[in-house]
Image (cartoon, rainbow, N blue to C red; front, side, top):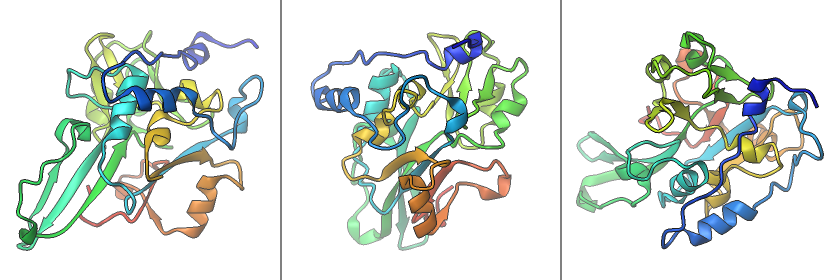
Length: 256
């Protein structure tokens, strides 16, 4: 198959390198997981797929396994406060104040620092790059390093990126960060090196309660389309017109 250098970079695969105590199970699950549906056979055809992602906030327990698995899979530095995915905790107090926190992206868990009797409600919201159909990060990149693939995934070409950070500033979801090792912008890729081989994104596979779902929007029988047909869904900041492909179930109005 003849592909350009840009297409070739889409397949750049990174290997899980962490082996710290407590992460061995996640590494094993992520490495050996396979998607039971929409698994590309043979050569991957970008034109046959269009990927989407669902987060069910009713199920998320804030365990942080997703963020931990992501850092392991994608070699995101553990010693820097940067994340491709993270979980935020929202707590609405009885006086109406809303407290939002995400210590170390949720990897280390959450501390109960507010008396339970003062809390009206509390819930967790996983965050991730929204892989928008109208991505502002692509629009502001001066060199074309940020681009959308034919199958709907927004990626960064590290060879082209000049590290100007315009895309980081332009993302309204705070989903991008500066990679201090590569000297480029970086972000979630939905584990593109995995999904093009029929595997699930690491965060989806690591979630112990099924709060994250991934699938092919072009397949009418995919789990994603079934959820979109059956559930009431929302997206983050719909008024911006970015057309996110990350859909939320049970999204509370306090979430921003």
